[in-house]
Image (cartoon, rainbow, N blue to C red; front, side, top):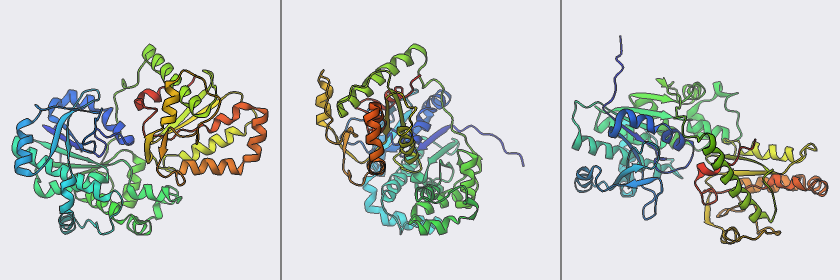
Length: 438
């Protein structure tokens, strides 16, 4: 049978990271949006959670005119509170942010519906499962409302759900509006993340794992269930690499129908003089922050290195990053200052006032601030994994480090690490430019 390659008339994409920068999926979506917007114009809609209520979201440009009639209808007839605007990224696609809080009072009914139709097990839910599921269900309701108000059965419509956090919305549409084609994309299986994060060998032992069994062992039943059932019931299940597809086959008992490699516009990285200028300004900011934190005087010849992403200590290689710094610290051939940054969205409080005061001053400081490794106070200081690992390394190699510091003053800077949810009060992308040093 020959299958025709059809181009949709409308595309809806749902993700927890739409206008909500958390990890890599934000980068995946935002760096290809311009191409999609060019091809589909304003028939492309991104749906995200309205988690910035009452605060200024620099990533969202709200509009009172976009979809105004439908927005009023959605509120009055469908009890959906949405904000419509544009994503503040290249291409500026239309964004619908939905308030999912009202759905919590219907949570049990929603979970019952998901069990009866798709055998999704929500009984073992904890942590962020409820929040993600209510957003996902609300996103599905938003698309249903928009479709019935603006479109007809002759319109070819695609709904793409990213990660387990949006699976419930895709399943809801399978029931409510089956004429909408549903795509579910997993960027990494939830149970695979959990296996790796619990210090178990993932790829070396992948052939022998049973996803359902491991979900029970690692207390991941509900997240695994929504991901697995969504993969099996949507119209098209996709993933982003052959490696991840192997995970899907072994852990979800379902290979991807299509492997969709992540794509991005190559112009989101500045070039030439623009990049040079941004790197110079970023390096100046990073050095200034570090010197104010630690009372040091590191110059422009300092090697700045860094890592970033979602705060998954093992899965994102933060443990390896720290150990590499530990080994570098004891390398007798090291001949320059090394300044290392870990930029992750941790459980932070406010930005440090003492640091801000120093940054506003033009003075040079010779004494470190209290806890001179963080730019923002952490709510869980004693349990933060990066902090604990640094303490462990210093205790384990304390004597060796002390002797080395006496001989080579630059060594201590290897451990200058900042953990922050916002990169030094500037945009994350601007700061990243400061890490390479040639």
